[in-house]
Image (cartoon, rainbow, N blue to C red; front, side):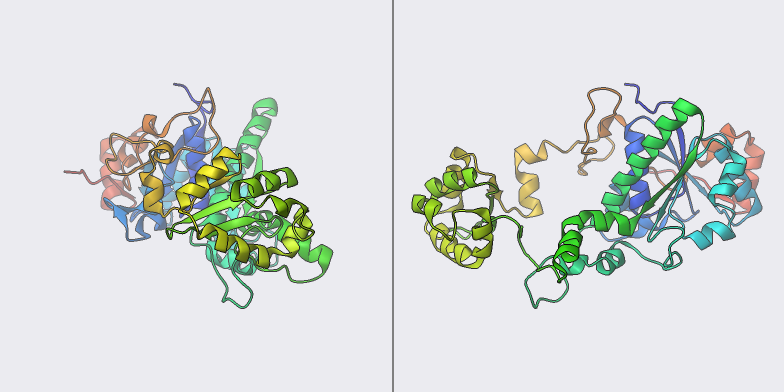
Length: 399
């Protein structure tokens, strides 16, 4: 199948998660993504354990469908190779700090001088022109600075960080969106542009309701383990010790919920007759529901809620989620990656998008160095010279 971005070449200088995730999405759409990384491999390869082969599972999760060119950009020959590659590409992506890009002549103006129609996509922590532009930051730092550690938990708890790279993945998705919009404009006008994706902006978007609450109420938003604007909307422990989650977001749904638990009179109870009342009386409702749910196993309640068309489900561990055949069906097996499920991009197209099993597996560091150098006009002798002088790294053959 031909992807929508067939014929588009992306030079990916990014590392870790946010940038690589966005370029993986472009590869899913058929773009040729050339990952330019350090001779030792980019930092994300070494984030572990756990590892799958020589690379971390984090790296493996956001680099499928790419080619790897491993070289030392600090050496003149290495920079010359990069410049030649940029001239043949439509998109350049990086997540360097602004001062690094300035020192190494990798700003938008520098890259545009090599390729005037380039789409130049930068991932930054706080914005290239922001007062915090030179502060080093990663997902956890940004979550904390934006107030995210105080979004979850109970009052009095220590700050709580989400145990997943929430900001990085959100920023990666937004980066892909921005690059695709710029590519549409380029196809219409022939003009490139600069695309900046900002980690803290991604976090503030995720926290938009909390930000609005603070501004409107002029107080610190209450911390919450569960959805604070609807009730009941939380997880409970059933009589067999299993946890499940249930969410009621309208008065009509609440009436069905009450029938399902045998509490029809709650519909007219002044405390619970409206969502505002249920939110105001959430602690006492949770206590009453906890006692009710303790009388039956989780399967009983989940069956009752399914019959009543109430959103609900078991609270799974990761292992339990992967053991559910209906959930595991969302994963894709790759013949070259036994035992490592691949997760498709969450937007699915009926045409022009490749399935992960149709793509090359994440590359080994330097796996495509020789082929790319030949493509750029280097003969075998020149390639060997670059290897001897430690400008580039060639792939190590696997057993």
